[in-house]
Structures are given as C-alpha cells and as structure tokens.
Length: 302
Image (tube, rainbow, N blue to C red; front, side, top):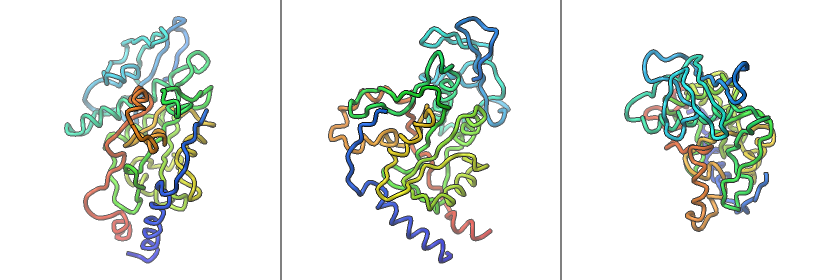
C-alpha cells in the first residue's frame, strides 16, 4: 500500500472517532411526473421513468401506491388524498428487481423511488411537496418542514449505523439502487450523499460512487463535515433551506433526525413511525462492504 494511502486511511480512522458523535451536543429543536395540460380540473399525468428500459418483468412503478408496493400499468389511474386523479403514462420503466433474495430490499428501493417521483409530480402551487425533515423534532410529532416551491431532492446517508463510511474499503450497493437514482436524476431530482466523513475525503468518496455506478458522472452533491464539531443534522437543515428533501434513505432512524441519538426511551417517538415509507426509508445497508480485495489494492493494481 502506498504511503499516501496509508496516511489517508489512518486519518480516516481518527476522523471516524472525532466525527461520530464523541462530542456531546444538545438536540436542536429546528423549525424549520411530469404534468400535462388539457386534462380535467383535478386530473394530472405522471410519467414513470428510469435509466434504461427493462426487457421483461412487472409493469412500471405506481408513484401513488407506494405504501403497498403495488405496480400499475400505463394508462391506469389512481386518486390522491386531495381528490386529484392521476393517470400514468410511461417513458421508460424501472428495471425489475435483481435477485429473489433481495426482493424485500428491492421493494423498499422501489417505494423510495416511487415516493420521490410522486412528490415531484405535485404542483407546489396547489399541493405543496412534503419534506422528509421534521419541523420540530422535540415535539415527537410527524410535522414536516415547509418546502414552499423549492426544487426536490433526496438524501442518502451512507454511514454504516453509528459508524463512518470508509471510502478505502471495497463497496457494494444494492444492485437496484444505481438504476433508481438514475431514474430520479432523469426527473431533475437532485441527489445528496451525506456522511460523517470530513470534506478532505470528498475525492475518495466520489471515486467510490463512480466505481459502484451510484454516481457515474459525478453529478451529485456531497454533504460532508467541514469541522470536527459539525453534525450531519446541521447539513440536512442547511440543504432544506435551498431544496425540498422529499425522501431520505438510510440504515437507522438517526439518519433521518439526530433526535434518535438522544432518546432515553425510544418508544416515546412511536408517532414518528408514520414517516417510514413516507419520506423515511430504512435500508439494511445503503452501501455494504464487498467481499474480496479492497478498493485501495484494486486501484493500485490498475
């Protein structure tokens, strides 16, 4: 291993401790589809799109039926809670889930995709988009920040549990996730990657995202920590001032709000479970450690 890589890896281990909650902080109580004309007053068309057409498999995702994971074919209609009729048209579809063993996780990624797409398909002037961030976490109620007319975005937390993502270890995302993200970008939904990593690891993280196909063109934005006392919560709230984060993908509830790091009795926050699959999406691991050679050895062998 080259000396630079060794020093970078050593620095990462120190940053993982310093930036993973070792410092005591108080919980901030922060306050924080295209549509077609020529339809009826309460009718819309929502397109379902993806990075590439699929050869076989079930019909395209239904952006309204995300709670049940149901699929619908183009031309069918559903009705939103506000009475708006939504008709589905297709312009390329999500590819089928990869592997029967991953069906549950693939279904979650489909719901994440469908929910973000449905929120983006809303007309903010008539039906404001729902933020995935809490307006007042300390109240323990699923009350969301206001989005106004801010552009939509999704946040993806790549840290494993309460640890810190290591960009020098071989990474393996769920095979469905790169395709779902490509589909969201096609609908002009911004993608943000958030981690406890310091900003000095930005280039290493971008390499991982490119090599795994999660962000092959380097289009997404990174939310890394700028100082040792900065928290991921401050980065999330900061982004919410410029975008509407309609969905957050993570592997623990603290990835949605740092409130969960401080609860002595987690059952007091049961009301917040209403946010699950409705802005908050829990994946086993967003990016898992792949078996075999580390990325460091792989890159240096090229």
